[in-house]
Amino acid sequence: MTTIPKTRIQSIDLLKGLVMVIMALDHTRDYFHYSAFFFDPTDPTQTTAPIFFTRFITHFCAPAFSFLAGLSAFMIGKRKPLNELSSFLVKRGLWLVFVEIIIISFGWKFDPQFRHVGLQTIWSLGISMIVLAGLIHLPKNAILAFSIVIIFGHNLLDTIHFDGSYLWAMLHERQKFEFAEGHTVAFAYSLLPWIAVMSFGYCFGSLYETAFDSEKRKRILNRIGIGCWMLFLILVAINKYGDLVHWTNYGFNTKTVMSIFNVTKYPPSLLYLLITLGGTLIFLANAEKPKGKVVAFFCVFGRVPFFYYIIHIYLIHLFAAFAAKLTGFGWQALVLPTFITRVEALKGYGFTLITVYGVWILVIALLYPVCKKFDHYKQAHKEKWWLSYL
Image 1 (cartoon, rainbow, N blue to C red):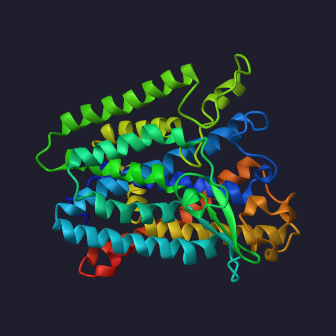
Image 2: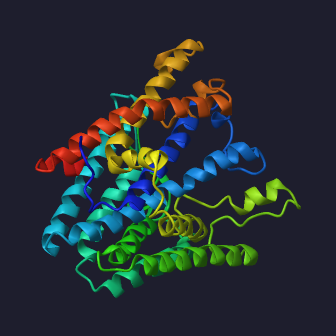
């Protein structure tokens, strides 16, 4: 039987696994929910509380994973010289960019013509790693200052627009461009704040050094996490800075609550990062001791997150193609020229939110034994260098 090395930190694997599982819910909703083709699930004027929550809970995934990628880079660096770590981050970053453009883009669309390429989570992680490869040569305080200035200050750039600028879209403004006839590229994950989230995570790596007291680590993480949430509430009360869209008072009701928590993800606003990174830190602070089958279940996904990420997209898309055929749309309708919810021909396709949750549970149940087997293989063959890229 394969055992997990004691050098792994369970709370990190647990959080990675949890956000991976939650993330699949959002992607299942995209491919199976009827209303996804008609309105934004976080629009308070059109959505419902269950739909809003289903989308909102997945906001925690990308920030948590980007933060943990930075933290993990620090921990890898404890076993490598700094130049070797830089080389690893550059190579892994380039690999992630390639995977996003070719393997993941095809998984999202099943389109051999690649008419639409979306540069999303994996792309942002890849470029952030390449930038981090340079940042790690700076003093740690400088890296922390860089991270905080961008996280807290990038919303000052919200009113700046450069129409037709690939560079600006890449850095801070979500845009789509036609780079050849019938072919578009969408910069969904603007890089500037995501780079800062990863470098911010790198600065927390020292808390996980062997000699660092676990109770002190817990206090630090709790205080910073709670501080993030308190600052979120202060900025919400002021309602002047921290998000591209200010919340609206619809009265003392659910719609107002949804408006307050309808934080901007593209690019991730300060309010978005405060609430999600605050939750990430609080979770890490209090997740070091829990044990049991449930924890072990999520840790399996957390130890093979990249492998899981790729195959879950293909599996959900395959299920959706089968569902489209059964409901009269034809599987060919799931060969997509753009992101699925923007395909006009698919309006009318889809199911209830309860069905979405059922498909999500099925996807996780099917992927668990596959991921567990790959996890065992990966732990048993650490001599295989290529496994570090999966």
